[in-house]
Image (cartoon, rainbow, N blue to C red; front, top):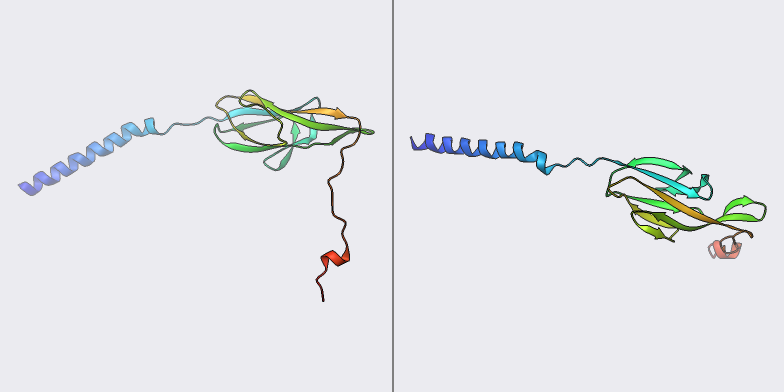
Length: 144
């Protein structure tokens, strides 16, 4: 009799635990819906201005992202605008973070949809190319 009582108590405890999990699981798992994020550039749009997660995009660019995830936004600077003029990156701007003057920005997706803008100014003289060391045979070949 004692053995049957033990089995009955064990079965009842298992039933309570399983029932509790079934009832509580929907409360523990919260579905996160993606939000619409638009990335654009100003005063001009098109290709060659912005990269998202290392991939060039055409602005305006609209996507669905999960809130709380992070993405790398990169503004190309010194984009040709015409003879002796270029567009130079000045800042990122969005309601969720305000402004940032960093050319590469780690963007955390907010809980609601928004537009992120890369702002540019026009510059009359071309940007200076990055400094490169002059390649010489003596510097790059092993000594014998």
